[in-house]
Image (cartoon, rainbow, N blue to C red):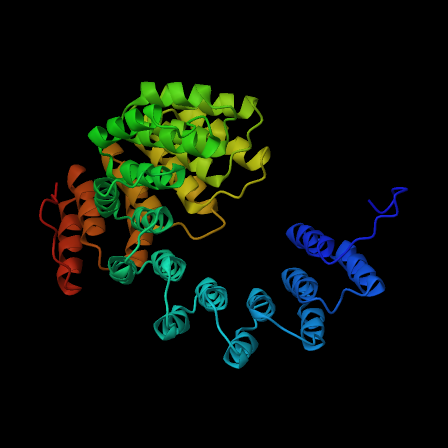
Length: 450
């Protein structure tokens, strides 16, 4: 427009749109050039242009520039005040935001909600709730902001209390509750809320359905999974969207319908790490480790980069099926090709696998070389392997390490005692019993001495 031969001059209607575009992509230099042009054109005193400048500087984290524009304005409206308050909140200056909010001549829904949302995002739910309680006229946005904040902090009781008080529930508030329950490990409550929403003839959108699918995945509810699958097929929601398809793949895999999960997986326009991991885990937990390994190889061939979680999933699959050589190859790939540092869980998978197939000494050598302190589960798995394979000398050494980590765990003493008993070392069995008695450790019900 500026370069055209028509000599078109930007005005007070052009600049706010340009500044909004700059703030959306954090184009600070371009925004400054526009500010210079605003001064040149003499539109800096226009309330909407100035408010847009404040919003731009605030979002680009140049709050001093925003305040300079704010202080220089001859007239301010509610949008101006709200933009300045939002700028302080974006920059984490909650004290100045609160002070300016107190000075604001007239407060509207945008300004109240901006303050509440700012404190919710900062994690200060106490101040947010105090403002919420003080707010004279609360709307659905105010309630939903608080509900979402409580849900994300794990306080579903407080979220539910506010939700029940909300007079007009929209799809966003329903979604916040369903998602909150799903994210906080309460899938049955998420499903109940969804059914309540449906009874009130509220049509779920894709975000509600993804939250419900997540809850169903956690609950492992096969009947609900079938209903969701059917509903999604018949609804107007586009199932091929990656985030929707990935959640459906995960749900079907976890609920045991691997055929359906595979079908959905194959029609995905783009298979990412999450969808691959869901399918691999689905094959693994349902005893199809060979298919899990084949899919992992395919993932690497498609140049999808695995993370530490994906390696945990595939190593667990190998562990369950005693695929020793494959697990060792994958473990080496993780270190040498992807430069990932194995966690204690990765080491535990390898150690448990080697121990279970009788390679207890190799497992022990790996365990000793771990750069981080192995957790009790890794030592416990090796001790169990020593018992199964009758390695008394190594069992004694492993048990000593494990008892130092968990001195009050009766199972460790019982396992060592059983190792001695299996090789007829009854005096050592008595010594273990005496140690437990001296330390006040009682044998667990269901544990044997032989």
